[in-house]
Image (spheres, rainbow, N blue to C red):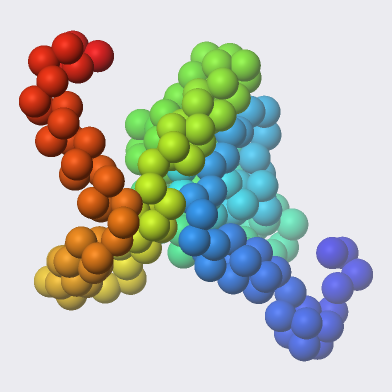
Length: 191
């Protein structure tokens, strides 16, 4: 990257594929972060739908110390996640922050003490998500993504239309039937 020129960066849309590839996936993306997630690593973690981390992980956007700025969405995603004041502080000073802070500030979903616990929880969450209706998971991911892009009333209207569409799926019929059977079968109550 140190030899990259403006014209080469501009002509190749340098780093564009990061955002377009991960954000266009219909499958949820989960990150298990331990150690250091700085610069592009932090931006990559923020691109994921669910972010699990260890309390001691070090996140940051230190690009300012290199005479550049975050180029893969760091200024935008950090601001949306943490607010303008916190994002300005972190981006303009290049200061690192911990996984515990990331979770407390709403950037990370969950925080763990060890790498092993973090990885185990990430795999467990991925397995649980994979056990649900693929179309329902895809639709829910799309609706949550829409919440970041539009106002509340437009988002609720979008969600309602997608919700209505779910009633045309086989998965909804199977799921509702299983729920009704569970309701009639008391042995399932405490599982």
